[in-house]
Length: 275
Image (cartoon, rainbow, N blue to C red):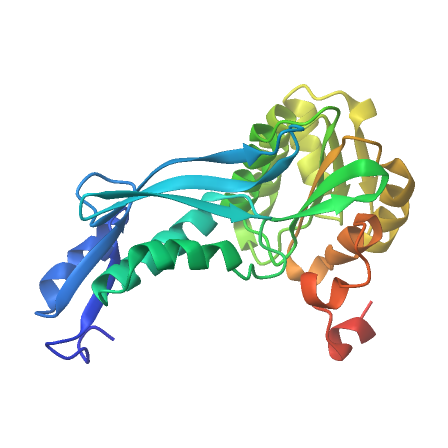
């Protein structure tokens, strides 16, 4: 892509990735960078979760500095630095194209969040649900669990974790490590699938109380359990590889079921035919 970029083209690079930054020397096109490292043309900072006047979590807020301007950015309905990076990349593109940056920041308020990517929903019984069911990997799962701990809530933090697939020889240790991380970041652990049994093992080895761990063979069983388990004030993270169909759990416990086809992953006819 860089080799085919014209001399008057624009190259937008992530300043926080050393391999990406090295690409600067491969083109004579105009370059603009984004990230959290000092020196980035669009510099992010202060990313955190914001709450309303009742203390209810609403989304993320951060600052973006560009050409001497410091712009506050607010994105509702999501958590996670991945959304901050996506926003910074967008702002870098806007800056490179000489668009009005204030308009660009305001446009991010209408950010159409992709389904299943750290998306926040109101759940049944006045609970809250973080839907991260698009897919799963050890790094992404660790990040999601740490975000779960960061969010303030009144009662329990519940992690519903399905198998992470296609890890090969790393399968056992990766799942056990997620269990150790879960012990430090949630009050209740629900594991789903045969591989997720190793998540339970890792959590137990790390000292988590067995009474706070529930295990199920598939997402249908977990769905039925969670429908009656969720209480007022609970914050529930749901995550797993796409083959585990963890969106079924989310569907059961979110309040707005009428718009599930828009909000949830894998809602097309072919996916719905599959168990």
